[in-house]
Length: 304
Picture 1 (cartoon, rainbow, N blue to C red):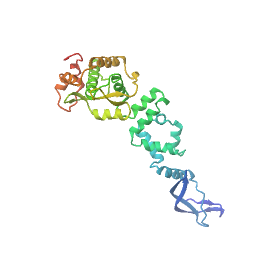
Picture 2: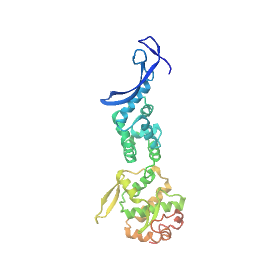
Picture 3: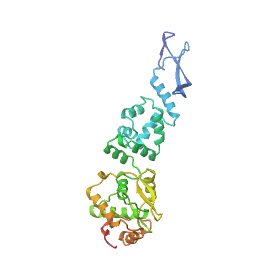
Picture 4: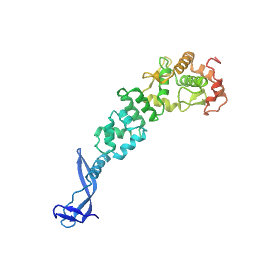
């Protein structure tokens, strides 16, 4: 081992390496750190540690561990959302410099920041809640980019299709299934591309949104939709937020308007009977995905 200068002996000496469990108080929290200490082999004096930054890193990292975190994990949490430091900072309402200092261990995160990291760790719903609360602090393009990068259960365009289709047009679950089936198959027939990211399956009462329960629960829990009861005590879905039409082309808006007008006030049973005559439903079995290739046989005005 390389010799180290001892100020007491006033000469270079062979250092003796020992391991100590030291206790520090960081922000009123007691942390224990296992550290390597060098002592003079002649007089026993503790020698100056040239690795002060490494020691400080261990102390601060031990403090983060109280919250179940570490400097390494802070970066891993950001990467789990597929976000750059800049977009991650905007989503959380932090500055980019703050995120950089945290990840490079240049700064010890404040308690509130640590609680935020812990809250969003493996919890996309909590992240979305924070993102939505900070929506007005960023421009629309950044918000859309962040939302799409984190791969939420539903993309923003699909969410806004729900908000638009239900605006002044509260619908039951069955009516929702048929309205969305109509807009996507009509769009695919005309433009070879559906409006939403949804898939449709063969259900007893006609085409249904595949994984409908997961998506509707998501929309309710994220405060996009809510339940209301009509005069017949049927459960209807109502939008809670305003829609953003900038996500759609003029042609897509026209299709949604066309479907809303055509299917408005149609009962669930009328919509079911109508959808049962669609070739895509007839040719598939219960639970089977209805391929968009059947869109060529879709006709919004047929079979009424």
